[in-house]
Length: 210
Image (cartoon, rainbow, N blue to C red):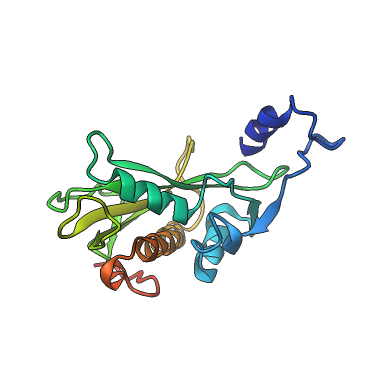
């Protein structure tokens, strides 16, 4: 998936080697993804549990926590604006396709309930983990979050994209892995936004059910 999109985008420019791979194509470790400050060492290990790979396509310049935080701060509370991308993670060319999408959104703190497929964890205001996705909600009080006089309520999600079947493997291990990656991105976003007390998020992922 990622490879075909990438090759399609560069195929007309003549910037490819004989094997069809773009000259600027790079493969990096998990900790180097999405601007280099989003994926902790624990989250990189969790990405291997999720994808089976410890190497990934280098992130495009448009995908970083720094840029996502800037966009969030600008768009927060704007009419019709409730969320956006943080990063996309792809396994390298020549390996099984895997597409993870990391997003942020503004949430209603009074909303209750969660689908039965999720496990509720003790992180932030609410953390939900499943075998193919996880969401961390936290409160952010920061001068950088435009229009927020008190606490802004945000959610960062990590989700496998385009998966037609149920996840394979150890479901509990996958839930922990997705929660670990979502925690890493959430903490990075909270720090980048200057949220007081890092949005109430712990320094390390807490994987015990609430």
